[in-house]
Image (cartoon, rainbow, N blue to C red; front, side, top):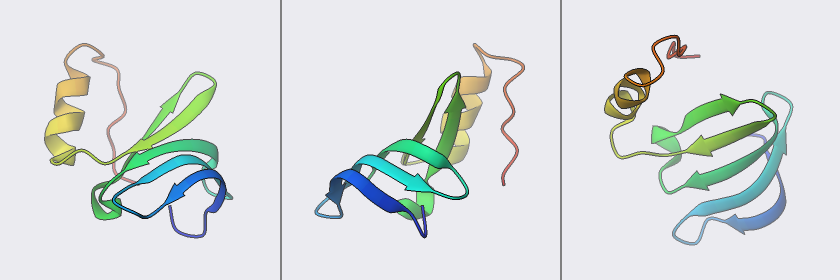
Length: 74
């Protein structure tokens, strides 16, 4: 989320939520309370950034119903 431009939303009071844009991610929606735990979800037609308490467990849980999911760190 570094070097992101906030289009609309909250930039840090308890959470980072709203619509953002960056060169690396393009336009995306963010629901983040801890940027250090951010996970980027690239979906059909949109990108979403979330911050689960345990990112590895979150990705493992997502890979169960979606076995072809790419969970490689970037």
